[in-house]
Amino acid sequence: MRSFILAVSTTLALMAPAFAQQPTLPAGEGREIIAGACTQCHAAGAFMQLRSGPEAWRAQVHDMILRGAQVSTKEIDQVVSYLTANFGPGINVPAQIVPGSLPDGAGRDLVEQNCGLCHGLDRVAGARRSKAGWDAMLARMSALGTPAKGEELERIRGYLHAQLSAN
Ligand code: HEC
Ligand code: HEC
Image 1 (cartoon, rainbow, N blue to C red):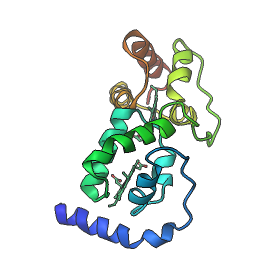
Image 2 (cartoon, helix red, strand yellow):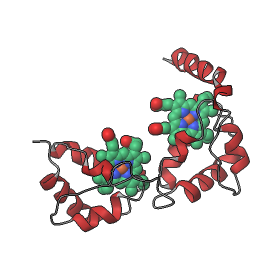
Image 3 (cartoon, protein in one colour):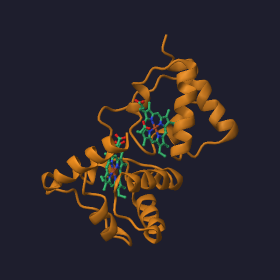
């Protein structure tokens, strides 16, 4: 497994010149570290189109360091702050590919407020899952940084179960 990951990392590192055309990273403290350390294996687009809260970014950065990203221990906080400030929930969310059209139903307003902060609502409107599938998805979206908690989260769950079930 380890050697597989190393092999993948090495292959990707060798592909680095292919990413000469980088999208422009916004200015801010930590930009230079990220421009250097986070574009060796994939283009900046791999993270510029994602939106996540601070804990999810931290986990992602640790994962990338395990894969070989050259970020020192004392740089981690700065990198996480930069990513959260520029690519956090609700910040410059990438345009929807297809406009979302969520069915009417109780809780739709909460879904609109919470589930379009990091990606288009089309991603939600187009998804169908079993109830257990939505529960797993909600746990993942919460860990990524969805603001709704407690009763609001339950109303979102109710909407997804009722309106977007797999069968
Ligand atoms: C040594 C190579 C390497 C470096 C350097 C690297 N990454 Fe990655 N990154 C990967 C690989 C390989 C994947 C695909 C992993 C997967 O599919 O699980 C990935 C995937 C990602 C993803 C997920 C993309 C998605 O669509 O889900 C994000 C976000 C990300 N990297 C951010 C970063 C950030 C931020 C940095 C700098 C701290 C960084 N990467 C540096 C190898 C690297
Ligand atoms: C804090 C950012 C954030 C918020 C808020 C958020 N998501 Fe996501 N969502 C992501 C990211 C990042 C991905 C892609 C990575 C992944 O699938 O884990 C994603 C992917 C998805 C996908 C596609 C997953 C797949 O397996 O195809 C669906 C569906 C989804 N989100 C639904 C929701 C719903 C429903 C909500 C509201 C309860 C929500 N998201 C709120 C960040 C967020």
